[in-house]
Image (cartoon, rainbow, N blue to C red; front, side, top):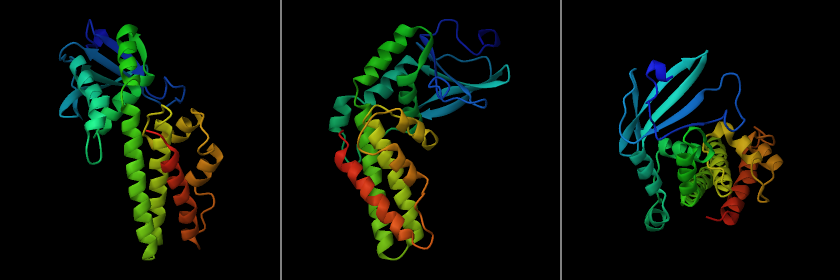
Length: 247
């Protein structure tokens, strides 16, 4: 990759993250690499600017031996800035809906936790330790519960006026947010729905069994002739999670 101008000569760290690292990969999975530098570095190929908080980072897509590699180029200062947003001080002083993280910030922190160093494991361990001691988990739990409660209210209101189709969609959304909050409270910080079942199996908890979760996620008991019954089955589960999950 260095020979192609894709990597700097002396990065602070290069780490791989994503589904392959977690053992969830498949033949079509991408390789996700994070390249951290002390200052801004420009690859010798075209890059795409990706929003990250108030700024941007650069991303490169390359193919090696037929496998797509997504390379994200970030600076150490950008890592500092994102971690600062999930400090305990920031969490405790946040008002309204709490700490606001965009998608890329959330993904970065999730993958920082599960990353595997390619170069300079010491940098990655230090940053992962900072993340572990931060309020990131509490931020995700609070956000998930807030969104879940909002969708529960939506479903109740929609049911009251006979808008059952919308109520079903709201209830399903509430379930997803509630489960993500539950998993985040046990250190599974991912937010991508396609890996929710994998994340669920990765934790040990007694709030909701996998079989019960999966039956609701896949709507196994849904009866098109009586959609309200399914909504009435889902909402108490969402409320139970909200009551039992600890920030």
